[in-house]
Image 1: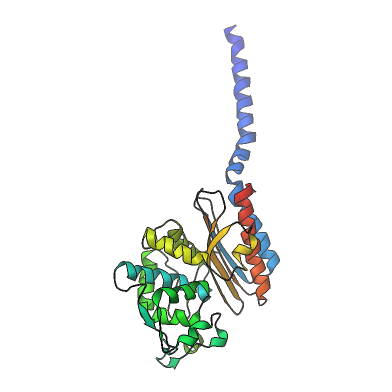
Image 2: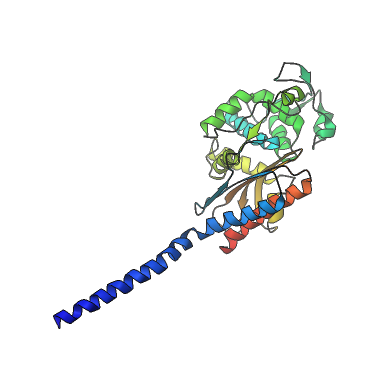
Length: 310
């Protein structure tokens, strides 16, 4: 009897090894299918768009799931650079260097970083018009910041970045680990643009900044909450929000210039304890509607992956 049990044990061991060989890859695949599947879906969307370059950075604060595609590719920042400016304003306010209720002179006269020559912002190229009526007067720092983010006011941006200085903005970015982003100047500095002295960003760095805000680690919990409220009031919603159900809140900032369209936001699915962060940067699509559709399609793919486990 003792001798006959050996073949049985050998057979059992063989069957166990076969089962492990067959099913282990499947189990491993299931563990990574969600992020891998999402990345594959996003790549297909990007390929179909025929955009020159697209960068995507996604991080789910609830699960830690992350998808990074061209995350360190450098893009002209367009108006996404207004988020770092907002962060520095709140930092200086926390340190008592300025008050958000302080009245600031409204002017349209700025110096180029290229040669110090003077330039002004064109109202016809600005998405916000009311601030131009206040030139010569004052406006609160808080209101200028709101206009800069929610209305993407170029005039408000130039007033604010001159106040807090690009150097201080850049120091904060480096302190936060955003090592690729460059905030050199305000908007419509033509001579600087001709010399290639432009603000730039990566999807990775915008993800870092928005994660800090979402997690309450940008300046302070109170400052993070206030910045989130400002971002939630964004008026331009053709990108990330357009791919989502109307019940989903998005705290975000867009940016666009010729053949450049970006959207970077914190997405709050209803009934979910934590949000996720999504950044989509695009280059090469002259038709702005196509660029918006691309960003919305990527946003929809991410949301469906989160909501349905697809």
